[in-house]
Structure formats: structure tokens, C-alpha cells
Amino acid sequence: MDPRLLHAERSPALHAEVARRLCAEPAILERARATLESWIERGGRSVPLLLEWRAVLARPPEAVAAFLTDRSERAAWLRSASPFAGALDPRTRLAILRSIPRGGSAG
Image 1 (cartoon, rainbow, N blue to C red):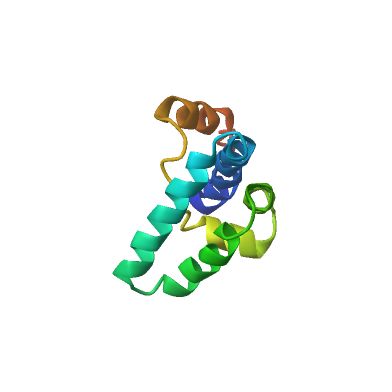
Image 2 (image 1 turned 90 degrees about the horizontal axis):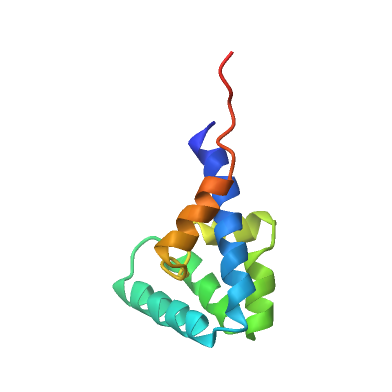
């Protein structure tokens, strides 16, 4: 399977799990906000994308969770530089990644 298509399936699946946990675990959102601010301070070409994330993360947890599962092009674009990296423990992350079919059977 094309790596871009594989990423297009993996990212929403990972973010759906983060969204599921977000309201029950407020620390997830606080860590994402702190991560985002450190990225913005470093600057670089991604700052416009990061500023959009800032607006998303300023919303209530329920609204952030809804955005994380949004299938729009804008949400997919923002998920390409997600401040929620590291929000899931490695075991959970691996289980989600393994649950996504790689596609492209031989023959």
C-alpha cells in the first residue's frame, strides 16, 4: 500500500483513540498544549499550521475530540503535525497500528 494512504488510515485511527480518552484524561490536552507552544517557540515553516492547532486546542475538550475525528482535508492536514504525538502509550499505539490492514495483497 502507498505509504501516504497507509498514513491516511493510521493517523485518524490513532487520533480517534486520543479523542476517546480526551475528556476523561484532561492531562492529555494540557500536554498537547504545552508541546504545541514549545513547537511554536522554535519557529520554522510549520508555524502557520501550528497556529491553527492553537485555535483548535483553545476549544473545550469535547470540541477538540470532535476535531480529532473529523475526516475533512483541514483536519487531516493538521494531524500531519499533531501535538498529540506521544499521547498514547506504546502498547496501545502498536495495537491500533496492527489493526489497520496494510492492503495490497500479492497476486
